[in-house]
Amino acid sequence: MDKLQISGGVALRGEIAISGAKNAALPLLCAALLTREPVTFTHVPHLNDIGTMLRLLEQIGVKVAREAGKDAAGDTVTLDASALDNPLAPYELVKTMRAAILVLGPLVARAGEAKVSLPGGCAIGARPVDQHIKGLTAMGAEISVEHGYVHAQATRLKGARIFTDMVTVTGTENLMMAACLGTGETIIENAAREPEVVDLATCLNAMGARVSGAGSDVIRIQGVEALHGATHRVMPDRIETGTYLCAAAATGGDVRLTGTSSAYLDAVIDKLMDTGCEITSERDAIRLKAPARLNAVSIRTAPYPAFPTDMQAQFMAINAVADGTAVIRETIFENRFMHAVELIRLGADIKIDGNTAFVKGVAELQGATVMATDLRASASLVIAGLVAQGETVIERIYHLDRGYEALDQKLSALGARVARLK
Image (cartoon, rainbow, N blue to C red):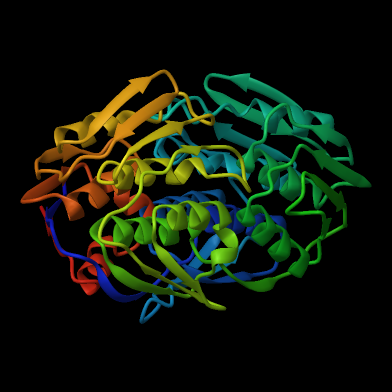
């Protein structure tokens, strides 16, 4: 199992390109299930989760053509779902990637049936799929849950008014895709507002769908008879962007990130400026210059456009070496402070009380061997390792490979002393 070895104490400097967004690419790939015509996606990140999703689509009956990109351009993936002969998402694939639930809505809408394994447990907390089931049932699907599988059937879905009990990104995406081929109008209230939802709606409309309101908390979908092929470029990864900005901030660096935009990251940018960083936003790039010492900043996670839960761990890492004490409140997941224990191994001063963490900045961190527990926790350990004195070894970095394309190469391009160990 691969490990990441980091020799800390080097300020990150230079320029790198940001990859396509994992959290946008996964639902986009599922959208190809809605049409018999080929759909092409560009700027697709080369990640383990993307590979898992493509294997899942292949076993459903989709023909997959993948062309590796050059110079951080991302892969080009063409999907042909003209023949769907096995509308099944087995546990063997779903257990490694919860986003596999995103095939449920498109499959039942297009093929009239879907059988998708329940995702099972998640390290950072409960991620129930009850809102997906509630919405599809409202659209007329007959759904049963037996032997660990959600089995949905419908001759054709019909328009419905759906109010989700909680803001759910994948739930919004699943229901939005399903409604595209239904009859009449579907209205999703309390919808997720994330940029990835907007990116999916843009792609669906390019395929002939009639989706409006994406980016607000009310999305309207007018059902159509059929969708057609299209070409769509995956949006830049805002969490990868934020992670590298935090890494530069923690190390006292000066970096320019290209192929991205601060428009997706207002809450994160505001907090980084509060730490004392100087940030310049360009049309498709962001530059950050860090001060010699950061100021601690308190955060509270909440659904978009508030501060993202996927950036909470990274800010815990930078607060660990900032002046002052920060209060971090996690309101999305009930078990998303597991990285705190590992940061403490590196010398951080962190106290946990329920869903609140109190982080008192220390003069410096010390390198040690730590273990990654989930994707964003892994990123926080990388940031801490970059600033720590001595050598840090991060074990179980398969988590990183799920969501950060070429992390070690990109960090090395910014001057970090990073090596992947087998």
